[in-house]
Image 1: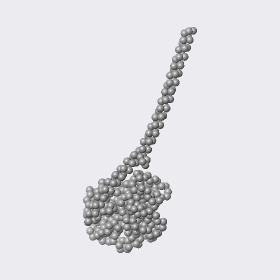
Image 2: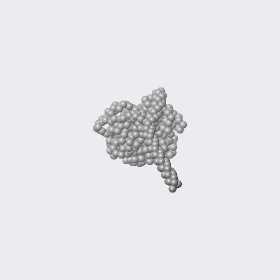
Image 3: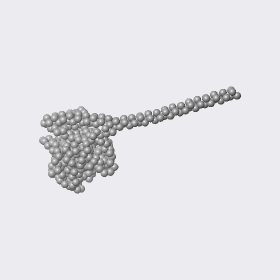
Image 4: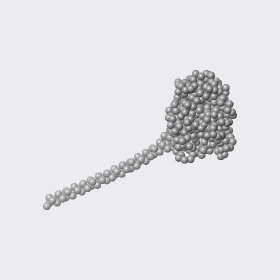
Length: 428
């Protein structure tokens, strides 16, 4: 009996110890789980703080990118200033040799010689003494281009000019099919050229220059102006003042709200000497630029004539703007980019008008905003009515409809916020 009581007592003590030990283990497990949860919460808070510190408008990464952009911008501006000084000392036209060809440098201009801007295949850039920049558009003198015209022409007749024109039109056929009802013919002085005779003279000089030099100079940026004067004109048929000095530089306000003949008037102010004149673009020069960026810039035809959203400023495109300013009210006012401005996608309505050179995404071969931002006047008119041509689409349209090669027209008495212009240099 005593033995049984002793065993019961030992069994109770053992059960009690096991129960106590189990209780301790459960408490320890509870404490461990609580500690783990607290640790995870602390880590999440720290991660959130770290992410907030790294990203966002005032984050480390954003500030580092901003600093990098500002440094690159300052360095490039310094090199452009040095090139502008060389341009001021250049008193005559000369041939400039680079690794992939030779190009004519007009008097008053000089190569920037900046890395990525000093070869034809990258987009050769020159500047004048005021910092206005142009890019060389290559048009090879080969049988691939000139199927009718002999490659050794020295005597230029009306027949030769017509052959060159035909060859260049066939060479750029992918970018003229949508504009079959448009003509490269003078239809009136709406574009700023006073007569058909003067138009033909300038046109033939343009053809001859392209043939002899295997290319031509195009403005690197849409024409802009440097002082914001709030160009808010409600009457599109009003005679708008053109009192701003036109420039072809980065970070300037796009020169809009003017008529085509006013654009030609401003275009002619960049150079007019014994060898070169500056002018609005001819339609064929726009097509040749499309072909240049296809062949040398690596863009597919579809990026040019089917959907240009991937590299143009259209309302249906979204991308980071890293410099300059942007406008959400059709160019009436501009907000300066502080760090990085993320341009949203606009399903409907207007998009955002940008100052020139806002993002390298919107350039090919150093030519900026050929796609979108502003429609750009050309020198040709539409046959069917009194109007002037314009190309490229604009910031308020869809990039899969209003592509780079698209042709459109604008009444010669009208001037809009979404229409501007680009300049080319033409040999006399």
